[in-house]
Figure 1: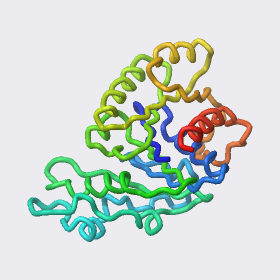
Figure 2 (figure 1 turned 90 degrees about the horizontal axis):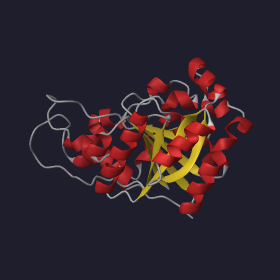
Figure 3 (figure 1 turned 45 degrees about the vertical axis):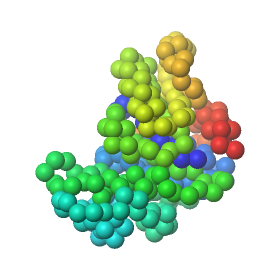
Figure 4 (figure 1 turned 90 degrees about the vertical axis):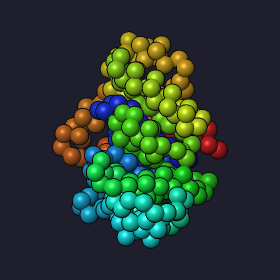
Length: 256
């Protein structure tokens, strides 16, 4: 399964991505996490030592030139829009607690020349990875909608929209749904986050009837403390994240 986790800023995308990776690993899956957020912080959530040593793929100019035939930042010329990428996780990913992590990085803004080679590498990496029966790729996407406009999430099997109780979060989810359909992403699920009451959960379910509701993450003091202290989410006691089980079982059921 290739899952893209998205939503508006601050809803808990990285938390869900990390906890999903932890639970799938515990169930015998080989898990590759991909940090597709320019404000990369998956390494910290995993408790990975020396996270700054992970070089984003978008910064690997020699690799991009080798695979696409175009030098990043140059203008004009021809390049391979479908570069070979299937060997990259084994070569470039760093492993911690039996979870592999890659950092995509992001293409530069205006004035930096053509960004097409970098974009092609990132899209190809997500679209053309070959997975075995118990392999899982989890993408922690950047906040908002820009990544969908660039098509970064193309090739994923399912997009999971994380929402919190609030109208702006619901509006973002609706926009993501429209753009996901344009990209041909057929499966769209939703996970409610930071839920503190039955009324909040009811509010979200009533306003998300057109989505596949996978489950919810209650407000957790353990998660809040882990975020404040920089503790790895892999260290939180299992009994405190039992809410994740229905979400994971629903996902596994869909990709058997």
